[in-house]
Length: 129
Image (cartoon, rainbow, N blue to C red):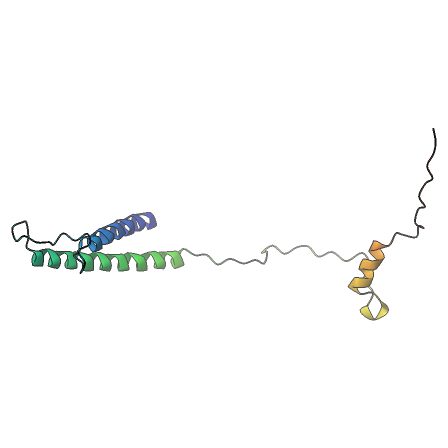
């Protein structure tokens, strides 16, 4: 249903653009309502027809826009970033020491950067063959 309304909406858009471009402007533009009185319709009748057509197309555009926005909110499902499955709780291997005893995050990062009780290795002297 939404696809049908979108197609109708796009057809109304194209018709509205065409109707607006065909109207006579102050500077001439692309308007068809020009000079001579002999033709299908007089310039006054053409202006009235294009004005009515524009109003009808604009009303249709407005209605289809409202329908599409209503369908978009109607089909929307609530989403969440919180996972719905409850993970199994596991007990931590060792509890973290309190911050007052020097167990802060920066201290643990400093300890992780230092080698584990090994003196730094001395560079090996060059060996001849």
